[in-house]
Image 1 (tube, helix red, strand yellow):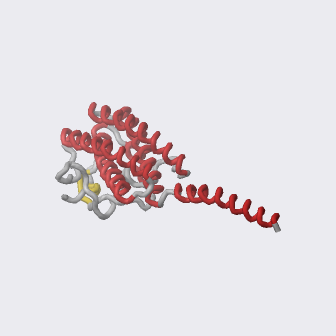
Image 2 (spheres, helix red, strand yellow; image 1 turned 180 degrees about the vertical axis):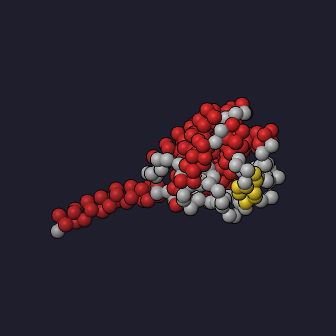
Image 3 (cartoon, rainbow, N blue to C red; image 1 turned 60 degrees about the vertical axis):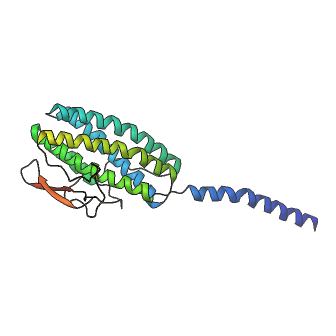
Length: 229
């Protein structure tokens, strides 16, 4: 009888030891929102690193070259934090940009001169609007603190990039998406018609309404137009 009681006590101690670990593991599981944001922002970084290289190699305007170098540096540093956070949470990250992002890279590879500059700036504006909106959504809806903190760190970087892109677009006479009173894109509803760097292939937030602006080829392309706040 004593042996049975001792076995019961040992079993209880084992369960007590296991329960906290199991609870900790369950708590460490990131939400769908957190997971998709990590994957999406990683793909944005992969795109920006490649686009930054292309800007330095093919840009005609020195401002395009300089801004491309800055974007590459900033997104390379940001992605180090993204990869570290994803590794800690057990989130698997994509190995390459999304299909939409790759389509933009292909277009940039096929463009040159002033056409390249215009396409680069236009696609970067659209992509940063999407990235900012996805980041704002993570800050407000994310549940894993480390991912929310990552988004809070990324937001001012993305906003600074957007401001630089707006200034460059104005210098080159390129139409820019409408900005909110704070000077940053505001969240909205539908997505873009043409591939944009912010496209992720996940169910991450889509940018605001669309507005037509001249495309490098002479036609029109729809880029996100954030709503007035």
